[in-house]
Length: 129
Image 1 (tube, rainbow, N blue to C red):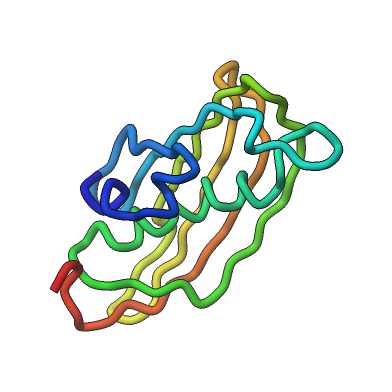
Image 2 (cartoon, rainbow, N blue to C red; image 1 turned 30 degrees about the horizontal axis):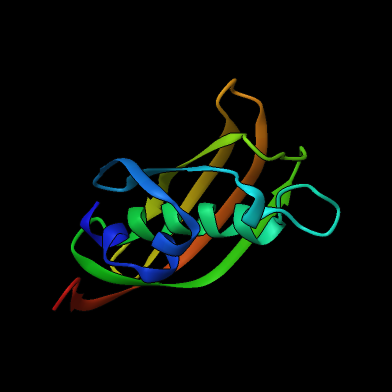
């Protein structure tokens, strides 16, 4: 949770960490006017940033710096102003150097909004060190 609080970009979007532990993280955002695109729906970049934040927190939760090397996202439902989205990241696999995560983004009512997968390279450097 302290990693999210120390990230100016995450803070600027209004993303908050709601849960975390080894290999997992959950973050949330309430969609506001500033998050909308020219079509009046939530910008895909905001949804991607939410999923990417959960991914980064989960990947770095073991205490070693883990840098993203590949991500993929799908968008399956539109998001409107006022919606509250939660992105939940789960570790799929982890070795000494590579780890894979799945992130599910959903509305408060459970409606799936996006799926995201990400791979990281795990370094020997300590997080925050």
